[in-house]
Amino acid sequence: MKKVFIRTFGCQMNIYDSERMLAMLQPDYTPTQEWEEAQLILVNTCSVRAKAEQKVYSLVGRLKHLKRQRPEVIIGITGCVAQQEGENILKRLPHVDLVLGTQAIYRLPQHLKQIEAGHGPIVDIALGDDFTQPLVFPTTTEDLPVKAFVTIMQGCDNFCTYCIVPHTRGREISRPPEDILKEVEYLVSKGVREIILLGQNVNSYGRKEKRFPSFAELLRQVACIPGVWRVRFTTSHPKDLTEELMQTLAEIPEVCEYLHLPVQSGSNRILRLMNRGYTREDYLSKVKRLRQLCPDITLSTDIIVGFPGETEEDFQATLDLLEDVRYAEIFSFKYSDRPLARAKNFPSKVAEDVKTCRLAQVHKLQSRITREINESFIGQTVEVLVEGKSPKDKTLWTGRTRSHHVVNFIGPEGLKGHLVYVLIERAGQHSLRGQFKDLIR
Ligand code: SF4
Image 1 (cartoon, rainbow, N blue to C red):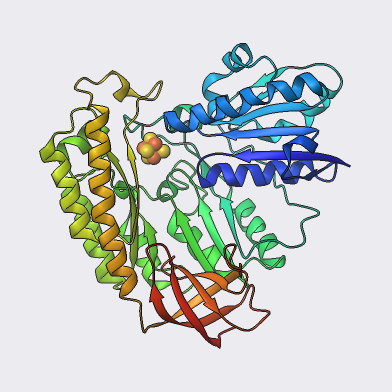
Image 2: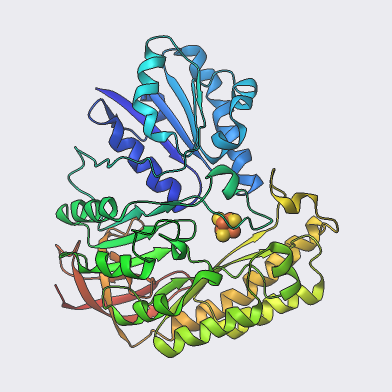
């Protein structure tokens, strides 16, 4: 049997797409972790930041030597860099056989056949206007993880001025609800207990299709499927976070009290330049409402420092917002110019050393807040969905709380896939440590 090596960069959408590609390749290919023994090498790429894109070019550049030694190996680049660069990839990396854009990955098997028949290289970066994704389920993977992603939409219509996604993933398209529900039913039948609904902006799910439910209604339908114990979703655009969705999050027991709500900046001036469609006040009033409806909710966010024109005052507004909201976790980045994104042409670029310094300040502040939040768990008994043994210490189980905190704990054998109570005894910067108390189910 042939072997495929897949290297995935970027977000959960890419992880999900890599899983689908793997499923489509079965039973002809089995996955391998060693690219040296693969007949097919796929690099699923991310172009959201310049650094991720550079990593792709460097990795695929290194494969040139392998291709010289074993010309029969097929090398493919998929995902956002493929979509963005298209034919240019072949000019820069002539040893590549296949360039597949974000919506073309479902044509992978047919393109491979063509290349095997000597009709390569192939570039397919067509973007469609309907959700062409077929239902693809793994046929040979018996041991699925406890949690799984399910994509519910792709693309984005928001055009934030720093972001390349609308150019690489296309316009917003929602997936038919019946396909989503079928996929969730399949995953649950294989033992998956936590479903994470994915999309660039899940909150606007179904807006363009009259027959589709709202996102809040879709959440209810997913949560109703027998065997679904937990539901999460990402990413939520703050401007599209409706009262209906906030109430649904608070009401449905299966929907975890956790929300990733990217704010990007605490300054109204910068938010306007970013074209985010909300003000700091709008954002904070939604946070307040969420906490009224769901006092235990845990929030996380994304922050960009050094957006063009960001002054010390604007940056201070971001630090103040972090103090106000007290996120459990943040993902923070230095602004970088992306091709096709409008901010690339904005004046008043912030110097690299200033961006580095601001990012360090954000990290320092957030580290303190995260530590304080983590320490507040000590002495509490929390519900954990057990994902398996800790990769760092096989004597410990690992899983997550409803609030998305990682918990490592000592407990009896056979807990994978179970919901348990754990007494938290210690708190680190990235995880909590505890003792097994009881089996829930
Ligand atoms: S909402 Fe903005 S940041 Fe998010 S994918 Fe769309 S354009 Fe990019």
